[in-house]
Image (cartoon, rainbow, N blue to C red; front, side, top):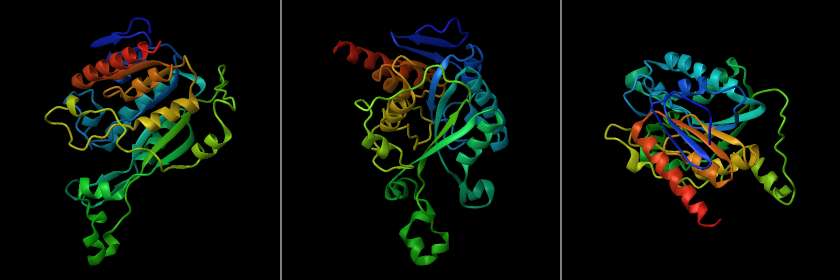
Length: 294
């Protein structure tokens, strides 16, 4: 999938996909306007996860203000290269506040930050999907004080609910010259009534690409990629077959695998060496599997 000459660290190509080993802001700045039909991704969650030691990694920002400044450069470039009338979908969640860092135990409204940063760059806040997550699994994984049963018995004013995932959807206003139309036989009414719910409570939490083999020794232990079910639904809702789908934080290629599987073209970008290498393997494997059924 040709995008013209782009100056990057490295790149790999398939019949329907391109992966760039690069900083996403630098990569996007080299693309022409309106090159992307739909974008879906999980951004770095501030400094919650350690992805790499690169100074170009947004997760290595000194604080949330610096992260926000860097993110707005990215959101502005993504706005420029998105086709008018089309969307981007951003996977996120609240972020725990740590007593040792901020002096309190609580939550940071990271989704709210993302909405403000996108709107500052011209995007229109379009929709929000809440993805149910099991609080018992969160408690077992994080040992968060607010989720422990013993805290209920001690002082429930310190107890809190589990954290959901969210998909924030933003629109670049303008005339969409390729409307994403759905016919009843392909997208029946009952399916729309189910997916139109603001809460998706049937997402399989473990239906993800394996990131374990791509992780380095210093990576955060609880790194969780976006579930394939979510990607599949967003692609079906908001893109057409043959559209160019982008993931500027491609990781090990989850969005790319599902885009190729759905008959879309994929443009991905990843800065971390091992993730880029694994994404290329996953995309090649997916395209190879599809060719067996042609």
